Length: 101
Image (cartoon, rainbow, N blue to C red; front, top):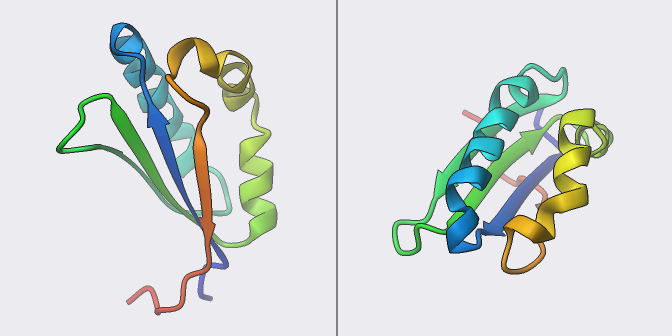
């Protein structure tokens, strides 16, 4: 089955909050990868900007992704994200056209 939904999320850390944000973001990886609908979930940092973090996520369905975004371990982040970021999270939703292989 080809995944239905890809999300690329861009998070711009406040420089003084970078270490705290990075710890929080790392904490999302293991539980997210254990979610039934998760195909891929990867955390990146920009080679050009150490305060720019990127999640690349692939989900079986948009419903699986929507359920993920409501997970308790994410809700506390969403409530305080603007304390950690220079701007709101940039969420870009995509549809995969190629096969996974």
